[in-house]
Image 1: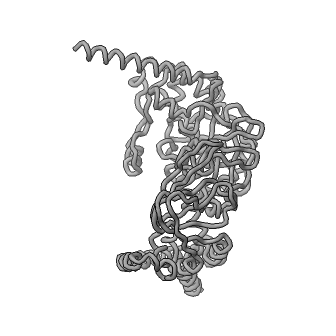
Image 2 (image 1 turned 90 degrees about the vertical axis):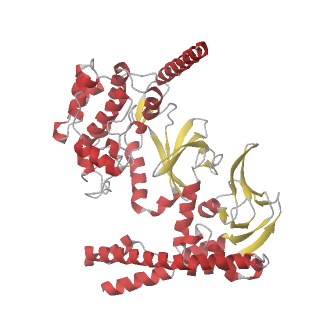
Image 3 (image 1 turned 135 degrees about the vertical axis):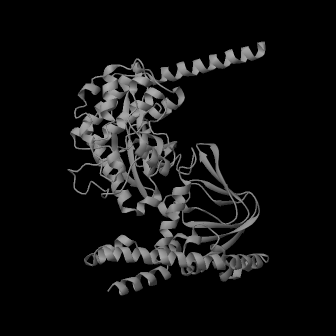
Length: 514
């Protein structure tokens, strides 16, 4: 039976339909872990074979294309040359030759002159364009203001967002030189995506790479559900965050699951779980989640827009913070954690960049994408031994592969307190091997040697929260939460900015005198 499964897997890969290992495990679960190990080995062997074969064939294929490309008319009537050309066009280059041959049969070649509008904003996205020669510019019309999003040249794809989302064109594609392109209609594309599912995956990976890469991208200016996207705020491992306004003109933040992760079952579940968990938490020190909805071929979470910097940005601009600021900020973070922990939710990725500040002086916990709530069915998507989180702020038990809990959040909170007080992270290594070594050699520093006048209660909190043994960390956050009060982070930034300007002016005067 194992041999038959391997044979089927090999045939499907050759046909361009790469099956997911989890699918095979689900269908043949009675075979146990050995099926997983053998399929993984087979997959790696096949990828190695393909890589070696491509290594020997690529230079020959490239020379063959250059020879054919010398006669540009061959693009009109030589399907083979188009199939070879796709080998050098990401993301089609990641498909099997079977898939590229099938796609080339559906391509229609067209020629263009400088100034031609090849795709028009607002029109139905009924085709995908592959630029074979020449250059084009992607131009977004934002209420009469033109934004140049990108310039694309030979062997690039445009129109991919509309093909995936089935929405109207989000920007104009204007030719800046003479050239030619190949076009495939939506019906043909969707038929081929049905035959070769890998096509949808690689196209989603291309969209994930492009969307959110710029402050203004193809989604800016578009309306989804009851929100209008304005610009990009940030991009993380799982999603992209945009600023938006709702239909009443109120500000909001939209967090979008990266398109390539829509094919990742665990990533999608984590995204939905985050929305569900945070919506259940109503607390002034936790960002509010308003809604979750599908759009543009992926999922969005609409949440409260924090109008201040993150705590990491504040530390980066000011360096170490005075204890008079550290205590109230720690108190606010502790209050948010108290609420989450009382609901059985552990954040598990607590760090300065996941604490947002607002103009009214509040600190809010964000990004519960790795949060764990054992009471919810299927809520824990982290396998034992799997490390999830940000290693620099993770508790020792998390680094050892254990599933973090509320006590792990306390260690992360201690790391945040240390960073606020010193202006730098407790663990400074930037690579995984160096961090592992640093963590293995680490012992809690003598705090009285770092801050001579460190307040006793703050010192005691640091000593307890950074304990190696989870049982030694504070079980009750109430004393820390009692420190909470509003903090005007903008005043801090203004004072720091004024100090730097004054210092620069003094240095300039001294230089002039000398």
